[in-house]
Image (tube, rainbow, N blue to C red):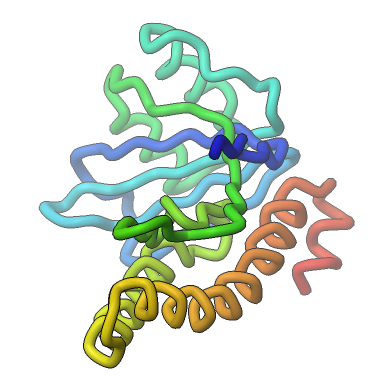
Length: 189
């Protein structure tokens, strides 16, 4: 079976830099005109940056990407500006943001979990959480069921409800973040 991911109309940019912009002690998310930029402190004093633009903004070649990234997000001030300074020639990863809906998550002795089973836009920050929940539910069902097919079937029933609740939330957030600012701000309030 072949499934084609569905593009949501946003190009995502991701990178990690050594150092931490002042004031970035937790998630910082800034929304701009047709774009967004987030910063998250990670281990060893490093900072993860994620950003998005309307599809078509293009990721460029690895050589062009640092300058495209800086140019596209130059209007952001404060911690984003400081982050871009720390980028020092590193090429951020750029790719379309997609989501994926599979009818089935298992076949025979193979079960997909996490993004392999239910990838969705990252705008609600649920990818890792859903994967951890999948692991917990799978462990419970493997402990209860007498066979793999029974465990996988019960796992799917339990997880499908949660995933199908989260998916429209992430799609709505992804769409809202890219609205024109006046409309976006009213929607997000």
